[in-house]
Length: 385
Image (cartoon, rainbow, N blue to C red; front, side, top):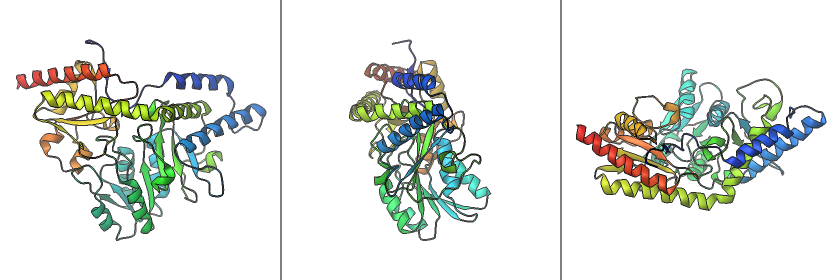
């Protein structure tokens, strides 16, 4: 264990489960036809694709049949799903769009592009706890808004947002509501219908599924403008030949989570708490961001006061600890964390913060060893100052 690399960056991506790999390989061998083709092999591929679509939707609390069916559109991942929602629901040019100040770059940067296209974009503030400020949202909703976008749980701190309350309030002001649920799904129970949102983004690789596939769930009756144009696949909302094997892989991964949900949740939460407690015992000026609010079980964002996050990150990487300075989509950026900045954290906290995240496959031995290495590295860096 002393020389082995320890992966504590599961919020960036998780390893693909063996059952998922086998399901994808089997599907590639058996269902190799284009699911849009009308011949028998095509029809068989279509049935397998739709079984996966319906299975995923059911686990996530959506209904694809009945008098008021929802829709599930497969995408290439969470970024495309978020972009499809932000651009597809933003309304005519000049409309007002409201997003939280702690959104993932795939939402925040899409909103910036809307601004360049002459939309009016405003941000909802968050409290020092990392939770969206309802009073700020109340003020922003006094003026008409076409779309409100608030993530279900933050990718940096794990703070879970009061989304049902936000969605209900936004609907009272006749605004559509999108949520980026990418980090939450496969970690906590998520029910699309209960959240009261209009659209929800999902990415399979965050819960031990395959890279390259995600989905956007749409509530019944929601009108979405497509980003791509081509054939009639997926209701014309996301044309292009669907990948049956990846869809099956995503369904397999989500099914595994459903069958092990409580066990996985408890496992990751216990690992996180054990990890934080071990560091807090040895590092007196350590700050655990959002420890006082309900968090995702797998996320730990820590400020090592007095140390530079980039220097610490490099030192930990050399010591065999894989973690993150923030979102993987901002990897390599030296800019301060947008989430911690929005929370009003002191500069010393922002400049010394790293994110550690666990998965269903992380072991207790890895957590104990990683804490030992981190403590050693921190002491060594302080001695050099």
